[in-house]
Amino acid sequence: MQEAKFISEFEKDTQFEGFLLAKTAEIRTSSSGNKYLDAVFADKTGEIGAKMWDTQETPFAPGRTAKVKGLIH
Image (cartoon, rainbow, N blue to C red):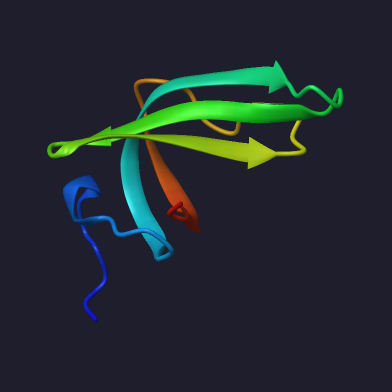
């Protein structure tokens, strides 16, 4: 199977690694009190939400390109 290059090509339970535009990035607190990053990334085909668990800081700034690696759910 060919690796997805754009958000519109993402399929459930597949991995992605590439560069996306960070639209938003906020540190939030879970119901158990742990900090996590809640973000939205975009490319020319759409947007996708993302979470990074157990983090205290935002590793990128909104409006900038970020290297993203994760599992699509």
